[in-house]
Each structure stands twice: as structure tokens, then as C-alpha cells.
Length: 389
Image (cartoon, rainbow, N blue to C red; front, side, top):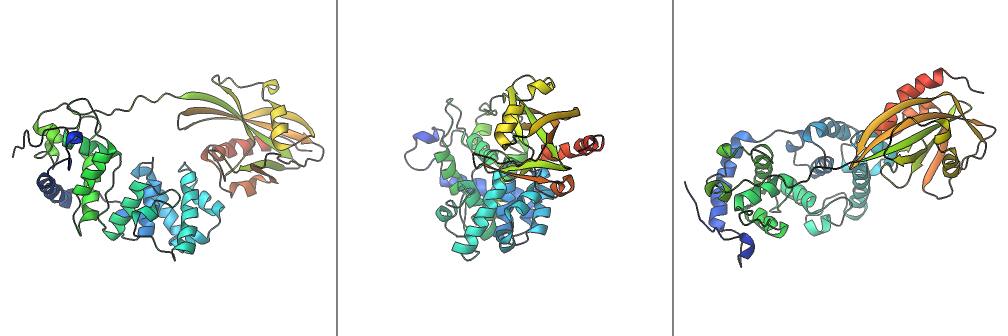
């Protein structure tokens, strides 16, 4: 079936709807027919529980399904209900989230669970505008919760469906990308009463496994008979993302030792807010040679922690080098052992960190960033090879 030249004007220039509703209806039926035999299976798709769907959607932000699956199972084993999450300590939530990254997501989950319990009786509001006022819930997440849990006709738009709709509309034929306003409108036009859940899931699946960013599988696409790009043989829009550029950062983590205890801190701000780590400083942007004792900025450690007792590197002080990546930064993290002589009473003057002395065994049970946890094994070896006063 050919639909060539059907409504070929650029959608942005149409006064009413961006595409004929009859064409959308035809595309929707082809989509659902395909979905019956090709739906992907994930743990969060086997439930209509809005709590479980919400948790999965937050985890899936900037994280692949393969990575999320084991975390999703563990999270629901530990916090099976909204009430159990709302009643938990933040540190317990961060501990179970550990390794998944973007920890602000976990903190927003915890905050929102408490708000839902106290202000909404433990129920999810059915109004997307109200949902979007809660921490960590934007337009897409609100639409996902309402359509997937309650089958409400609320559209969703994410990276895969955004690309799918642009190609389906042939929206790049004059070099001008379609606005999100138009794409949200089309996403809403695809919905139908009592079928919103299946439609939204089907759109995401086609966008994910068929309408690929590069080399889309157009011959296998259920929407090909109505797709303006396919029918009119338009150039396939390729991913417009520019190659990510990274900044190299060189950081130093100080493992300060006093009476067989280690100095740790929990910051209230920054990328590892709420997690326990060792005092850490940025040594420089760029270069990554292992610094000498003279280069590791002990005065900065004194400033951060308020340790005015004598500080001296232990023999064999450099014990670990780790590499990790955070957003646009590629980070080299060097670990140094530091001995405190005399009685140490650390404090922090800026009010943004909590400082404490604790044993390594106690530290291992607390939530911490994945790179710091990776540091614990070489740290234990280094500690075993040094004598303490």
C-alpha cells in the first residue's frame, strides 16, 4: 500500500493537526498487530503496579535495560511497596542503588515516596500535571506511570519514539527538525481508549529495535506503509548527536589513618551527595602522572577537614589508581594513605560534609560510590602492610 505524497507539507506549517487522523489510525492498527508477536519482555512489564513501574522508569533514565534488570529486582525485594520505601532511611536506599550511578535519582525516589505517603495517602495522582510537581518526575515519566499502570490516554515521548515520529512524518525533508510540540501532539494522536498501555509500549519497542539511530530496519517496520520517509524515499535522519568530548580530571582521595580508624566524609552536595567516601580533591584538569608526596596538596586536606595535627604520608603511601567516567569527565583517581599524629578532631567549616572516624569493616556496610568501593580491596592490602601507632 502506497501513501506517497499524502499530506506531504511540512507538519510545522499545518494549521490544525500535524497529520491526518485517518493515517494515524491505520498506522496504529499495523503497530498493534506487530506488537502482538514482537513485544519485549521485562520484569516491569509484567505488572500494573504504579510503584514498580515508577521505580523502573526512574532506573531506566540514562541506563540500559540490561543494567537495570538486576537492580530493579533487588530494589523491589528490599522495598516491595511505596510504604516500605517511604519508611526507609536514605542511606539504605542509596546502599541498594549503589553502582547504578546518578544517585540523585534514588534520592528523588525516596523524597517522592514520602510525599506520596503524607500528601496523597500512598496513592499516585492520576493528573499528569500533579505528578510532574513531584521530585524527579517529568512529562515522560508521568505519562509512563499513567499509561502503563492505569491505561490512561497520556502520551510519552523519549529518545526512541522521538526519532520514530520524526522519520514517520518525514520531518527532515527540508532540513528543519520538527519541534517537540509537534511530536508530543502526534504521540497523543496515536493513543486510543483502553489501549494506551499497549500503544505506548509498542511505539517504544519499534523505536528501540526497528527504527534504529543508524541503519534502521525499514523493511521490517510495521509502520512502513504509512511512513513518509520510507514511502517517499527520503534520506533517513541519522543521529544528530555530536561525538562526546571529555575532560580529563585528576583527583586524589586521602585515606587518613588514626588509631586504626579511617576518616570518611558524606557530602550534602555534588555528584556523590549522601554517599560515604574519603576526603577527595581535584589535583588538576588534564595530566595524570602519579603525584609525589609534595604534590598531593596536604594543605587542602587540612582546609577541608580541619585536621591541624601533624600529617605525614605513610611509607608506600600511594596504594591505588582507578579510572572512571562521570558525564563528560574521565577521571583518574589516586589513593594515598596519610597518617595523623596526635589527637585528631576533624571538623568541617562549610557545613556541606559530615566527617567521621570508622573502621574499614564498618565502612564496607555503608553506601558509597562504586569507584570508592573498588578502592577498598587495595586499601585493605595496603593497611595490612603498614604499622599503626
